[in-house]
Amino acid sequence: MAEVVRMPLLSDTMKEGVIAGWHKKVGDKVKSDDVIADVETDKATMEVMPYVDGTILYISDKKKIPVNDILAIIGKEGEDISAHLSEAANTVTVEETPAAATATEAAPAPAAPATPAAPATAPDASLATVIQMPLLSDTMKEGKIVAWLKNVGDTVKSDDVIAEVETDKATMEVMPYADGVLLYQGVPAGQGVAVNGVMAIVGKAGTDVKPYIDYYNNKAADTAPAAEATPAPTQTASAAPVASAQQASAAPAAATSEDSRVKVSPLARKMAKDKGISLSDLKGSGDGGRIIRKDVEAYVPSAKPSGTVSASAPVIAGQESHTDIELSQMRKVIAQRLSQSKFTAPHFYLTISVNMDKAMEARAAMNELSESKISFNDLVIKSAAMALRKHPAVNSSWMGDFVRENHHIHIGSAVAIEDGLIVPVIKFADQKSLSAIAAEAKTLVKKAKDKKLQPQEFTGNTFTISNLGMMDIDEFTAIINPPDSCILAVGKIAPTPVAEEGAVVIRNIMKLTLSCDHRVVDGAVGSSFLQTLKAYLENPVTMLV
Image 1 (tube, rainbow, N blue to C red):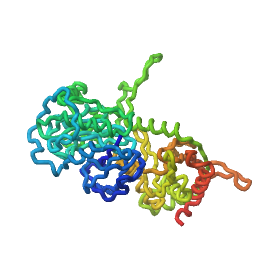
Image 2 (image 1 turned 60 degrees about the horizontal axis):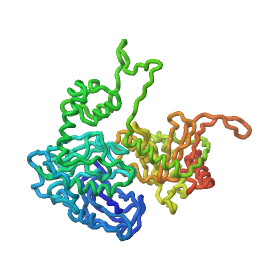
Image 3 (image 1 turned 60 degrees about the vertical axis):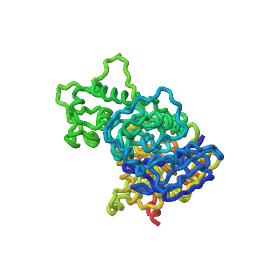
Image 4 (image 1 turned 30 degrees about the horizontal axis):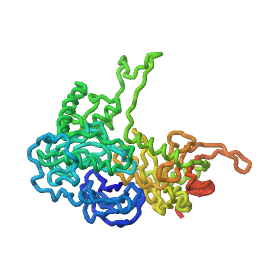
């Protein structure tokens, strides 16, 4: 079945993408991680990948494409895509929408007929705009609605934030990119919407939303990235305003009397609940004393007065108990992808010891001159990138029926955050100086911990590094991060007695373990790579030649 590639939302201010250039044409066969186009957003020029295999059946002839509009269609050669082409032909951009589409009075959508057939063609785009869940990463199956910031019947502007959505990578704000009345909410807060599923509908007050729901839900079923994705619950048009009203009325009842008196953003409320922080302990820095995200992040608990009973009192001896922790979107995807990697790729492991004495001296000297403090992890990233240039087989990916040898070197570095792991990517690492790598890594780590990474910042890796040395881990093995063929596990630097020329001396030793996909990398290839990497780290001046 044909897959629709839509213009993704790549920044919080993006309304449309400008096609800077197509890398593929109609008739070309593509893989899921091929770059098919370069797109200019309001922030930068980014690469767009289809995330599916097939033949390109259609490419938009538009120069400017609004978010969620059709960019390309991929499927089997000769497949009928007339229904998709009809949608593309009927698409109306925000600028083309008649002024009448902007509602002046908020009103809920009327009840829809009980069982109308799904329309064969797209409904009138001049009356309403459907906001679909965008595909924001290659691993995303659905987005979870953290909070609705607008209710059915509210008048919204194109750049209003209507919802906060949790993906497997970050929590992001969603805007409608159209003016009008919020006519429909796909699911209540706390539930998920499948990629391309209907999140919301914005349009002229009184518009019948049932045809839009039927049409786009059918389209979503056709374009879902994987069968195992959780489908968005289907609601009738007439039920939407009622559900929204019930949700709104239920919210105060579910909250404590203390919470209901506090002005707090929905995202800050969720973060405080997850961290076990009472809202009464927080001081709001937002408008009118409203508690916002940064207030929760900056909170430092004060010491409890003596005599206060601890909330975490020990469980009575002999009493059984447990806590069920709901999986975040990120944790679900980590479990799925790493299980797939471990049980699909035949892993083998190579460990080598590195004398870091000269690296420690070089780092101290460089940090006296560098504007950004260079860490040992930055040294490993740079040396690994340069070693990959000499051993391109390690910089390769298993593609099923062929091996892709990447000519570019993009190093992913695993970062632990509250919900799991995310891998920011330093692109073209072999071409960057150590100080540039240090500055970029510091920025990406901060954005990762703040859940502000954009898709282009955590995709495209060709090799990954996982460093637990700062956690006092001697050595470990890591699971390969697809689509890479290898991952490097970095342990701590520890003073270690070693034998040199018949004498025992103390050296600062770091152990590196390379996990290899045996379908791509053989033992001799992986060993040669580690020897080159070791040579760079043991004599860092060679990286500057």
